[in-house]
Amino acid sequence: MAEDYQGLALTTDSAKAAASYSDCMRAYLGFQTDVGLHLKATLQADGEMPMALITRGYFFHLFSIPALERKAADSARSAAEAMATRGGTPREKWHLAALQAWNVGDMTGATDLWEQILLHHPHDVMALRLSHFTHFYLTGGAAMRQSARRILGAWEESRADFGFVQGIAAFAHEEAGDYEMAEAYGKRAVEINAKDIWATHAVAHVYEMQGRQDEGIAWLDGLSGNWDDLNNFRFHTWWHKAMYHLEKGQFETVLGLYDGAFWAEPSDEYLDFTNAAAMLWRLEYQGVDVGERWSALADVAEQHSTDAVMAFADAHYMMALAKDGRDEAAAAMLAALSEKAGTSGDQARATADVGLPVCRATLALCKGEAGEAAQILLPLRDHIQRLGGSHAQRDVWAQMICRAALDAGRYEDARGLLAQRTSTKANSPIAWRWYAEALEGCGDSAAAAVARSNA
Image 1: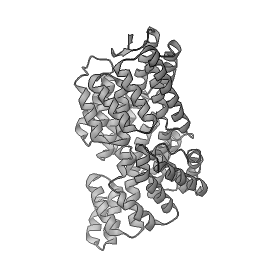
Image 2: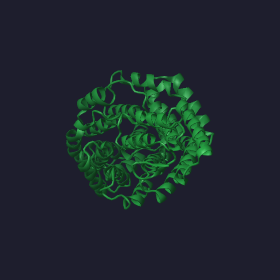
Image 3: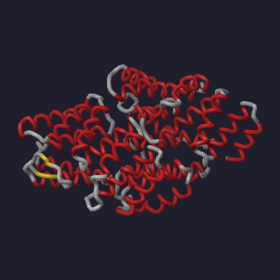
Image 4: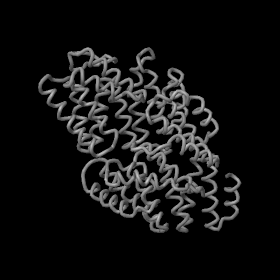
């Protein structure tokens, strides 16, 4: 037996494998580009180390690509065979069970197992980071915050990577709507490590949700010099900066960030794609001509039109296909999603209940059928969170629902939706302008004038 850098037992007699695995975990927490290299070094030192094989399976899932999903299943089989030969700790056996659950689409079951691990081993950063990820796509901010709060007391400040855990707590509290605590956790993490991009991004979310655009721009500008050697998550942080400029009506700046930062070249990473598609959709709602940019996105979306792995990503792929008139690919995607909806697993249920209807509505909107889109979207108004993603990311569908109601002439529906929106985004000029449009449609010119003044 050996131990990782947090003192957790590993079934291996190779000190080099244990050290490389520790390097892999720390790189994973820090969004470094060499995570895969450290994992490869671990397996070169001990090709049958159970936690290394399990981790390889976990990482395959994070890409949300069908071919890699199959490789995750291969990794689970290899880990099970290794354990049958050399045994494994109870913690490692829970991890194997979590990977096996994820392999059959049971993300809830996997998350429950990671949470069980954390009750016994609160310093297991893999279980912590993965439960943080799956809560994000399944159960949302309240569950993320509960998860973080259960382990925070076990992390003394002198422990390695205490700061990264503060950053995880920051984002969990932000998604739960606890902005004061989120900002405090996030800024403490960045004080400890200015390269902590997850914590940086958590504070950026706070500024986004509170309409503090100028503070958000200054925050990201002041820290951006630390990101050059980090992975593609840095592009998402530039997307956040573009979101502030979008709200301020500085559309040329937004397009500059799109072309030069978060979509400077085509990417096969689903997060990069969702950044780009959601931003173009938002820009067009503000009357901005985005030129031929949808076509480049549609080229990528076509390659993923039948993936049906993650409902959140699928809904963004459909945006590009529908906007660029890729009818054949869009039809193939709807067929794949319909098939997915008939299977088991958390993402299958999310696809059936929310993802597939949202994709159908997106296609209707792009064909000028706002009435049909509104008919589909309005009943989903309180269920969009089942697609996963952050409040900021899901806001593109909140806008879509509001805009569909307005464009369909359903002004009473739009009035209620936009009353809600302006109460939660009181510093949003966009929200107030749309609210004025809804009020005018309802015949309330006086209230519309107030809304325009607020804008």
